[in-house]
Image 1 (cartoon, rainbow over the protein chains, first blue to last red):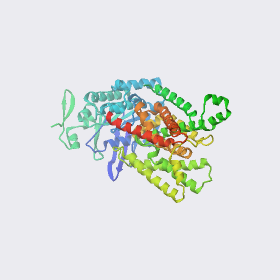
Image 2: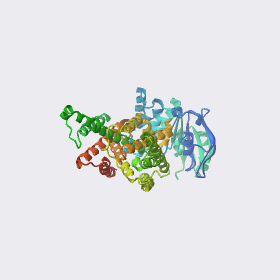
Image 3: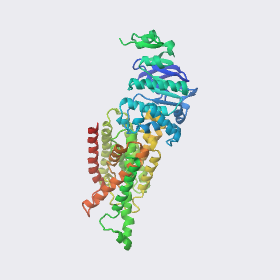
Image 4: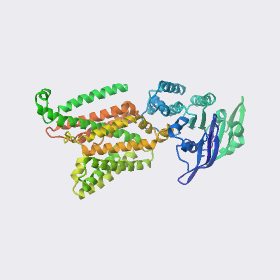
Length: 252
Length: 319
């Protein structure tokens, strides 16, 4: 479990996160949802030690995040950021190979290589493995970074809006992979999602944020109701069921 | 082409050039002369061989310094000559020349390296404040920053009648290289080898701080190692042969085009092409106005500018 307690983050007098206390359950898919500027990415970044919170602490499995050796932490937690601006010319296979860095320090074993080709296959990159990142489309590049984090084989995987550039085939396939990692691999996933229907279809747990604070959190089926979501986004949203699946209707 | 093809090409090219460089110069030197005349052997050992080695070491280590700088700043258009590193090293040297001219060269070198380090850190600090969406701002700001440092150096040099020193430090040339006067460059070469051991770390750092942290790297340590290496290499080169602009800019860009930025694969080729290109320029400098010489730095300035412009224009037509 990841425990976030009294976390605040201030940058240039703007309170991005305001006294956040919440728990992210192990072995589940947790969706971070909320309107733009709610602080979802900042919270994810603070959990992954990408930025240092002004106040508060994050504990992973009871251990304070700042007490854990970076190399050890890199075997327990991986993050894929939203902005994937890359200036260097790196081949897809090399990038995915860097996911094994925390385990192998650059000396790839046969098992490492097997993990790399497995990740390339899972993320539909085998045909692109020799291409440079700057020769890929946005969605392909996103998949390359996801494959890298996947190869890192961590207990926790944090993804910031991973569906952004993906077409619906790859978006659905990514969520299915995450589901499988959680159900059969014992992993835990935290993902920032903008699409409520993906949230309702795949997430076990929801943390809803607005203006730097947690508005509500809990199991998706219990907390993601028409009233709660309408209030969160200040927009009329109707959660309905069809063929035993739940949908959010807000399109018109 | 596979990386090993690039390695073989680079290596055979370097070997050919080096042998050519040994037999090229104001005094004629032939293989039979070497065998029969002990004086010719002296010429080879005291002048030609040190000069060739110095050229290769300088070119290779400047190219490596350039690629490290580019990865750390995450910008294709920087090198020690456009980040104030060289100018800061000169300021340090100038200070030593003025205040403690009797210090041994190693100590002078250390002061120059420390000064280069401070200058580079100052530039990194500046570059972090620039918007990443404007990649050309970074080299522009770097050039202005370097210009400011240079004008401070020139002011003091002018006041104390040391302008000719600035001229010597600014134009890299190898005609003065003799055995016993270039050995500091081996240290620059050794530093480049050291960089190779951390090649993966530098490649990952080049992908961004966030990604480096997520992979468990101590980003600050990598940056410190890189900046320290770049500063020392620049200072060593300036002290022994003088600054060679453009090497660190052109060579990494050419190699990146050919084989990408995975340093583990590309660093040997970066070093090889750097050494080879500088050697070609030095050899041209020996023959173009023979028996007079043109500094290798001057020739590289011309060659480098042409290569770099064609790279810039070629990139646009590709995109």
